[in-house]
Length: 323
Image (cartoon, rainbow, N blue to C red; front, side, top):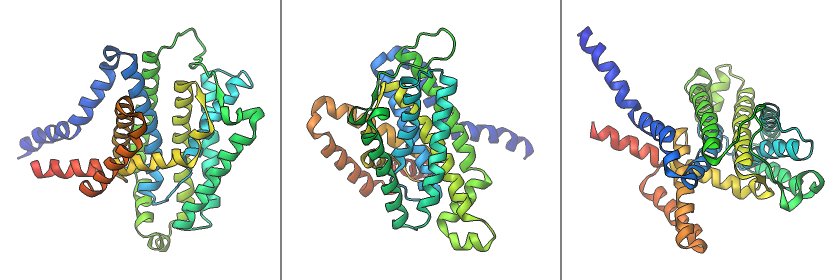
């Protein structure tokens, strides 16, 4: 009996992580052979996948309906872009951490103010705060470039001679994504993650058990802001420009759409939602650019009707039935 357990346990783990191993192998090996266009497309999926995962931490696990998450994405992007273009601080190891920390601080402040309301009112306050950041990026033209944004941001300066290309930058983005995804995975599967889920399910009961739910929410939002800022920094290096439209409520709506498509409270579903959204946007835009929002809307309705809970939970149920 003991021998059987020793044999089947590793085998079960391999089956469990096999899809992740296959996808990871593809992401590591394939892009250089697929060309710069595909590598750039996958880079974009990873960046917005990280943004969606950061939102899922507060939306799917803590139950905080944030509609201003793109503002945190924009704070990280704008902070790094302004340091590079306005103050000539282009060292990646200085400008990038500053952008991440600034986004985290803004996130904690956002949450502290938004927690004055609950439920729908929390959503409205985050929406208002996000629009405040959007208005700042438009009006403070001397620093943010106004409607035109901050453009001409080069690839990262690592402090030593290294010439980036779309392929090499893809591997930098992949490295940041893997580390961030690992940290987020450990967070949601830790005692802290379980407490967040308890707050989502019944906050009053958690308070009765002695947990400071207010503090847990702020910490969760701050952590989420750190990773949203990291996604914004990757995006500004990838795109070379950040504009107010990357900060507005439409961008926040896209992130929410991604986690709904992939599956809220699953973390990895956010990445699936990002891939579905961006691949649909790219593919449909090549065929009929003016109709891609309509077709995307139809796909979203189909997911809601036939894959309730999102794509990843549906795939998990199919996998369980197949056993």
